[in-house]
Length: 119
Image (tube, rainbow, N blue to C red; front, side, top):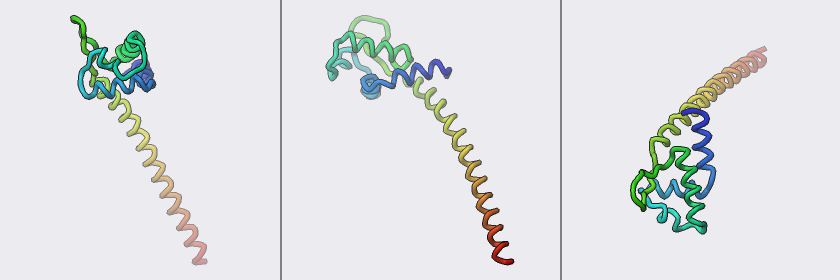
């Protein structure tokens, strides 16, 4: 996933209302009116939030007669998971190497102290 795409996805998910919409859509498709119900905002504001989610590829609204359903696009989450996993593995490898270096230093330090005690 490109950096620009990731920025759009994370940017879209940076808003609490949009996170809530995604959470609700994880339970199943919904119409725009159903999504708008719990919010104290205009339908136009809800459409703006949906446009941000659509531009990021997180949701889709298939063409067709009204009312159109809003659908969560789960493959975006699969790509996000792959992206996050790649950096998680890299971080774990660095921490593992650091653990090895620290263990080596600790062993060297113990050997030095043991040598001093025997003198």
